[in-house]
Image (cartoon, rainbow, N blue to C red; front, side):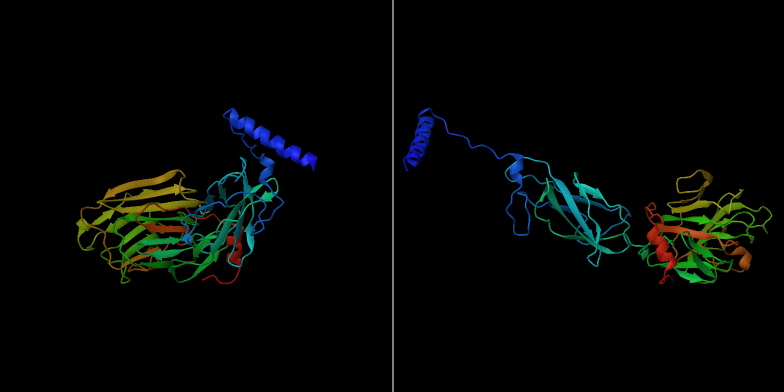
Length: 378
């Protein structure tokens, strides 16, 4: 009892002395180790810290690229200064955990293979020295679509065993590569809901060279509607001429802006004879609008070496087919199959048609290959 009184009196004396001297005792700040507590929070958390705020992707947004980057805000300890790490949970539509990294940054690039056009959920919490704070809210996003036709755009990788186009004639999907047009009467047809007056059509192609069967063979084409192709007033063709042509391997293009009987509406690219390898991929891109058209051919990839690059004047008349039909290959016209699709079984992948530069295409992955080999392909 006497000892207790002494402690009270001593404490009072110290406080009185401090007040008399014009100072107030400063409490000692908790050390970083005080951030963790044996106490358990409402959701089991053991770290005195807030929940991170999720930045993106959220709100069930559909991504437009194959790369998924999760970003969130930093949080700080409630009673102590320390730098936490961040634990992430990413789950598929079945609730299965597909990624669960712990990182020291406020963003994370997902490395797991995700299914295209699929909803995923994710959340984050802070961790420190084995303790953890509360989970953030849960956000949802959808991965990039595997293919679509929307307005005046077509995005069709052709590498997942399906297509949003209409397959005409003999065609087949080649695992890990793309869609093969088996003969010169085959093509892949698309109908744009909205006419594309100024735009780009680009695609990767393998399996065609100057030795392919055919004459004025077509790589890809466009027209108005689906009537006879040869006399169409809005016919466009990009050509790789076959072995029946006097100069096999010649590359050229033609675009007609509204009247196939008026020579002033018909514009042709220079005809240049080239050597191709059927074992290599080639990038073909045709752009049009604002009085000109351009054809570019590159080896191996979109950024490979140019082997053909020509720009031509197409006059003041707009290229305005209604409805606007697009083909990989081409329909059989008046001259027969020899002037239709390239012979030899070309393989197509990563088609883009649209008013802007082509977007990124997902790479072939083990998941894509599994989808190709499994059921459900068109």
